[in-house]
Length: 143
Image (cartoon, rainbow, N blue to C red):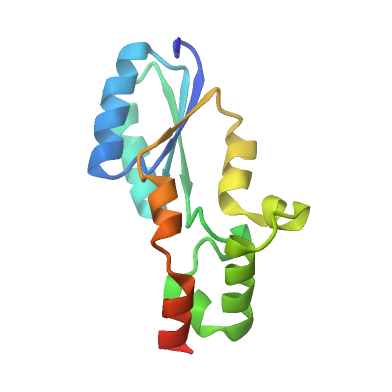
C-alpha cells in the first residue's frame, strides 16, 4: 500500500511496538500521523519525539481507552467496573448488539471518525485486548 502523503492512525503508538512501527512507517513518508495511547502524557510524549525526528510530517495525539464509551475514555478500569450502571453498560456495549448508539459512543469509532485515516496500524492487538477483558470475572471480583 502506498502511504506517501497519507493520513495514518497508529493505535498504541507510545509503546515499544508502536514506536518501532512508526519509525518504519516514516520510510513511506506519510503526511500526517495520529498517535494514540491510553494516557494523554504518553500520546503527547510520542508526538513530541516524532515531531523532532521527522519535522516534515504532521503528528497529532489522541488518548484514552479505545474500548469504552468516549465519555469514559479517561477513567480507570476500576472506576468503570466499581460503578454498577457503568459496568452493566460496558458489558452490554461489548457483548450486546452493535447498535447505532453503541457505535457512535465508542472511543475507537470516534477516533477513526475524527482522524479520517487512509490507513490504521494496530500496535496494541485490539482483538486480543477485547478477548482478554473478561468482563464477567472482573465484575464479580469488584461487585
